[in-house]
Length: 98
Image (cartoon, rainbow, N blue to C red; front, side, top):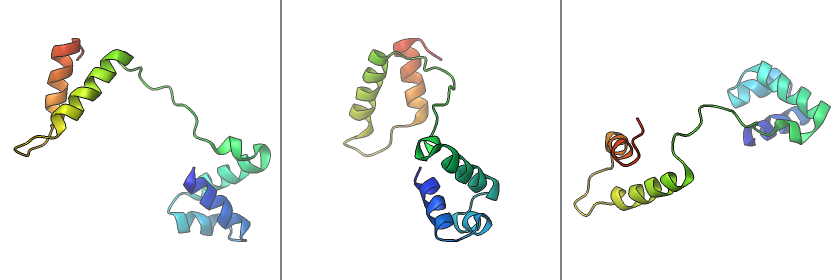
């Protein structure tokens, strides 16, 4: 949203859409779309839409348990880091989810 607002601000300050796109390192087509949406529907149209994506395989209780595991395991007295493979193994063992 911040980049979208910056683009609108630059366009309002008399910078053309192409120059705004170069300044923000984004495509001119995107700037054109944002400006058009803004003029047609206002700021509400620029908000990020919910993207469907794949649903989470874990329920809320499992996510809470996983979050607690991460907090407890990420800080180790001898140093080291929590690795992604460790989390994959934990999820498979605890929740039977691959």
